[in-house]
Image (cartoon, rainbow, N blue to C red; front, side):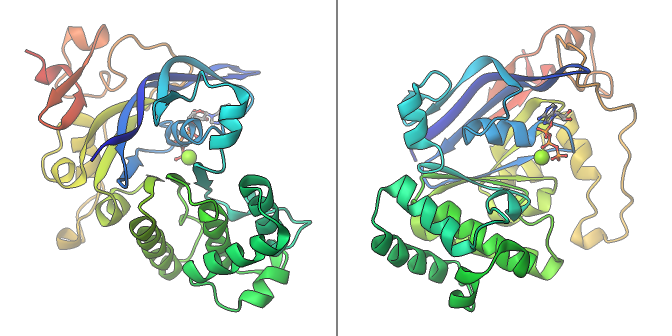
Length: 319
Ligand SMILES: Nc1ncnc2c1ncn2[C@@H]1O[C@H](COP(=O)(O)OP(=O)(O)OP(=O)(O)O)[C@@H](O)[C@H]1O
Ligand SMILES: [Mg+2]
């Protein structure tokens, strides 16, 4: 599989009234054509910031300090406005945790979808209607006529998320970034929405970047997984390898913290120590203060180590 998008040495800060937040300290990843990749990590680890950077949707107070995001041979962080406009919301689209982020309370679902089709694809109103009816079929939307005439608050969360997925696939994107798209939905609906996303990326050949707190979601639908801790991608590998033989000490403790199907009563393990303050500058590994294998070097420098087709940010594996 050829590489469609790669993130290298990416660091992103937020400027706030309370100081500078180091949201992404060091991110590396590779996404192949048609691949499904999951970004997992605890709250505040920088998953959404990395996802938004890939989707060219960073908030205004975010500053990219270093790195590159190469998509189809173009560095998105250096691209001119026209190129960004061509790619954002068209070749790379986003599904948000809250579908209300896609829809405006003042417009019907039909109006918003039509607007996306016309502005992003440059089609006529008539063509737009045809495209919309096709994508709504694809997302298995029930009661299409009613949905098109509805305002967001008139739909259930599950239907609205289906409509948001329709909006995200309308332009036939090559990359879809889905940021916790099911976490606000009921458990039964969550499973339906995940299967839907899975079916869509498979049938359209798009690549998917799925952001989640749960390795279970990664195991279910993603070939590859990237683990983040305190703004750093600490490990990348095929989901099966990563779950069966985690390399980074953080990934190991994350896996211990998940009760497995076969050990339903497994205790949720607490990782000793405190999470890292996002305002602190860190030279070495962000997990060093909590890691059972820390050496002096870990506080000063760490590099990515390639092991087969996996990558881990940890000195244990350095020779
Ligand atoms: N717009 C913003 N302005 C300032 N700080 C922000 C902003 N968005 C996120 N942050 C901060 O950046 C850090 C990374 O946040 P981010 O939302 O990327 O993490 P996350 O892994 O997606 O977390 P969650 O699982 O809770 O969604 C956190 O410390 C967060 O408080
Ligand atoms: Mg998030």
